[in-house]
Image (cartoon, rainbow, N blue to C red):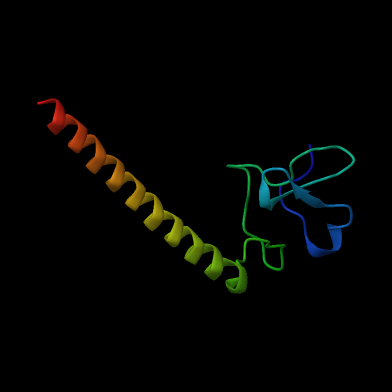
Length: 89
């Protein structure tokens, strides 16, 4: 298996893996480059975990709106269930 950390001059041929945008692999071998528990921090090494604020803020806003909408749906469902149970009693 390849070394878990690559310096900038050794990045030829790397691509993002199916595990996310912070894990890389060799396209020809399929080996994962960064593996859990085997990594170290090196000066001038590659970092792909920086988040884009222009992408993250709208996504967080959408997630908040979806959460609020789903909360309202659950509240209405609970209200309807309570009303049906009260009719049965």
